[in-house]
Length: 333
Image 1 (tube, rainbow, N blue to C red):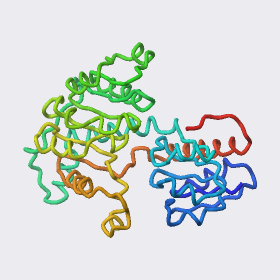
Image 2: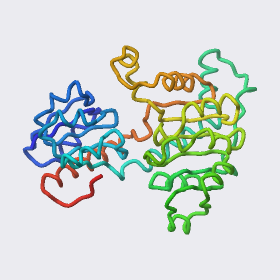
Image 3: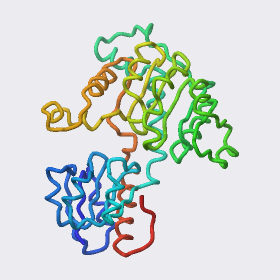
Image 4: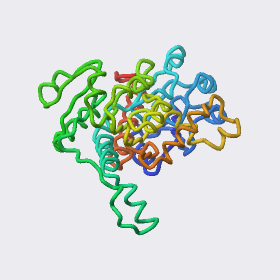
């Protein structure tokens, strides 16, 4: 079988190749998969992508031999899984690699925003000023942390929060009974979590049901001065509502590793030249507002990105592909 790997990052190829069956016919490329270049991979039986490749119906139709799409990510909203299923194409993801890296990064953002670390650094770098008048932060200990979603990452966040001495209140449509029994936290309704939390962190999957789950109505329920952290998916938050909440002072600070419409932001040059259809320019402008705002810290979707996580992504992806080739039972999306 011909296996094509796209969006390859430094170090990935070596780890992937070591886990594939000997003699596998493989190609590797740093470019993302698009409708423009899909024909390059028309002979591929298996294609492995990352989150910037939009595997749409159009792209799938340009890959006539395709039997498996292996995304090297936990999320798979960049793949038209429903259409793939109608074509008999399997889709697999990586479900176990990033709990600790993402949870740790969540607290990196949380501490950076709560203690105004970036403004302090920027102040010294730009003007060598030791005036600390505008750099007073807050202590995490004793604060109420609202965790939206208690999957692997959310549970790991709760464990770290205990070490900081935080009070933990959580929302999940399917509460984890074992977590509730083993960890001093409180499951509550979404409204209750939003209204009680001093800091809110999002760890939910993105689905049609969770689209804009943090919206204008949600911000209206929050305490004035709340901090918002999002390392999950940008589309979970209504960007315009977030801008309004920051402007009104409801949200005192935000740490965002993901943004709604971030793919257009990454490809801003093509978006502005009308090569990228469907771009929401209002969201693009709102994202620039967030990036430029002194109370907001935006990072380019790197919460997962550690040496250890990338090795695990490569290992699990290679194993999933090997199992598919060998017709060994495994879970698919």
